[in-house]
Length: 489
Ligand code: URP
Ligand code: ZN
Ligand code: ZN
Ligand code: ZN
Image (tube, rainbow, N blue to C red; front, side):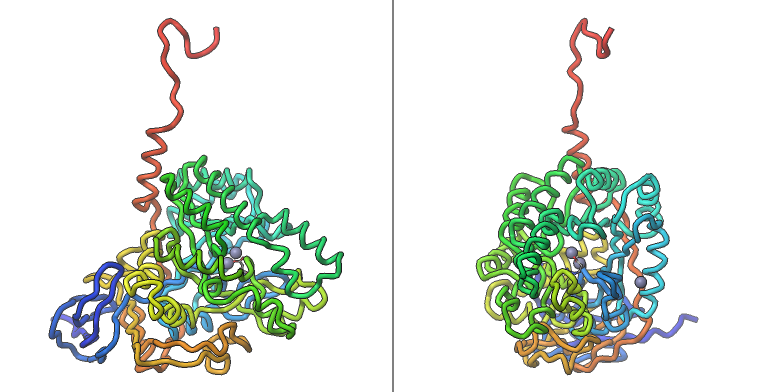
């Protein structure tokens, strides 16, 4: 006797994927999509009339309960993934951060513990925060046994997370060998440290000093350097939080030269600008302190153009939420303001409103940059990022007739403010499904603690394999000359 399976059908909506838009019902059983087509029936019907049925969002860049700058980011995996689901994001990728000298495997254990309460699926990037034989060896175990194929390198935060060029080169080469992909936070940490000291010495101690200390040049320089180092190491490269034209330009140039490089603008950088740091209210400005800082309109236009043209690939949040109380650690010294902002709940509705509603990007591009592209880069497509038979039923049913004004008061995040406060969004999730579980029902959040599962990701994604083939083919080879021995006599 077979077990009776309860099925759900998302009915009457328009399916929108990265490359198609069409009317169809979507049937779900056991957490998977089992059928897509007209007039499907099932045990439970979710009415999607007038809505767009899309792959759930994937946020490739979050820091939940991150130990940083003398404190911990305030949203943990429970609060953070609730916020994610409320806004239509069904998977987050967080960063396991080893302390200096700490085993990478111990760091994974810590992140395993932190993520036990997650309400949606999640995966990890592994940060390379120090270098040595142990790290070299453990990278193999992390890649082959722990389901992590991405390694993050901080080129900033001198004295804490920052790694130097020789360490980065060694780690990138190891990534290439293992079929893994390096990620970089691209800001020149030496220059930022020097600028910070100078600004403070000159009495520039307020939050605006943070923006002055990290101009686009430090990001453009570091992005270009990381791209060249990755090219020499034979590895692809993913540049997190691309915030300015200088960094985008380096990525664009690399792509046109055939290098495998991706850039990730944040929703904050797309819609909020540097004027926030000049607000007379210290709290207002400090709450928006993050690295890289918000930029001006010229840079924002560049980022939007990158999304439309495909030179930038994914929109993330870098969700790293600190309370006002935590931000006040930096009164009198901007370098002590914990760096980070929230955004998990708002990324999808804000990008829809500012991107799709304005015609800057298409609905299909919206799906590509919020879900499908990153699923392919991270090698978890089509388990994630797809509306296809066999895919996980991670689905957002976006309702363009729903809207709201964003307020901290109504948010799922645990902090006491929202950097998007007052922004009106013109679409919201009517339903959000996490492996078939209805976590948002008719707009109401029903996230289930501990429902989230770890998404293991294998190495050797197609791009990694293609790149290593090309690097092998074009590697230096000795010219064989008649009568001349290869080694000295
Ligand atoms: O300011 C930021 N972005 N905080 C989180 C850590 C990082 O650099 O991504
Ligand atoms: Zn701690
Ligand atoms: Zn960063
Ligand atoms: Zn980050």
